[in-house]
Image (cartoon, rainbow, N blue to C red; front, top):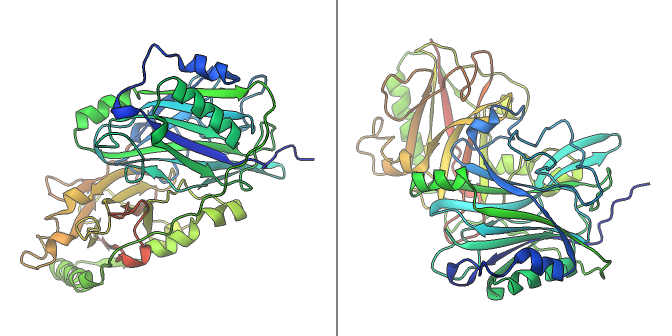
Length: 468
């Protein structure tokens, strides 16, 4: 008989401190939580980036240029650490006795307090159903259960959501969330800047028994305005993590299930289709008689059907940690959808040309990129970002009116000083000669929206494989 329950909703609440200033250090948050009836255990927050992928067998199609923040906690009092399936999730820097995926009982919460990243192009926090027990097996699902809270929708006091004091309360019950919120207010947090993100009641199997789901919260940040400030933030993430457990039974008060917002775009890229065709023709003309083949790429619309979170949860399949404010294209088709092979030899006459629309310059994304991925590890190892795309099509279309909204980048083992070229070594962070290369395309956060661009509004990227 299963012992999990799904009576309550798990929720993430984000609280911004008044005026962007930290709460009064003289007021003890731990004491306020204890006064609200909680037992408090310390957790941790730490960055996870490209170098950390070297130690893991699976990096879940990570973004090479983005950085992640993980939140670890100890198990519930008297309970063991949650079971972990074949997809190992805890990176080596996870503190002993803690896990970055959690099982939570309805009477528990995880409270995260501290400072958001310094100014960057993007940041978000999203909640996930990570693993589910299916018969005798633990299956990775890694599907979001609510839209991301990001720099476009974070309610806050002050001029910017960046470098702001925040608190997150992750709970399975509205009454627990209310108590944690009361403790935050009592310790100096601004009650008027509270953002609640509900983690779908009736979807997550709550509890701390082996059969219960595990969940996690994943932070993302990309393209810091000041790389040094960003590096300092990630080196010592200024967030404190607490697991709190109510010491007495409370009445259940499940939170309502939120409506997911559909991806949206104010316009589309159809006006750039002729420019992309002109770019393709110019590349073909430069290649001349050199052997080359165009590789099939899955559109963002097609990929979206395969990693739709509700479908992943229903089928218990891996959604790879998708997030509501991003859409993804991917190729080659026979690699990302089937089990094909695409190698990059150590030969100057064997390389790829990737080209298409710069979705940021076209006005449909806050930023976009091309990520070269070591497919066996599903690790993004090199990226070409939308700010760097401007001017990259000039080589082929020096006078075309759309050239600044297009891009072209070469992928080689050795770039030898070539501009707009990504060099792929054979050792990590790189791809061994006998391992498959894949390409992932991301478009983040539609301008004026809190979610991703409409994938049907985007022109799919293209890839040419040049061979000896």
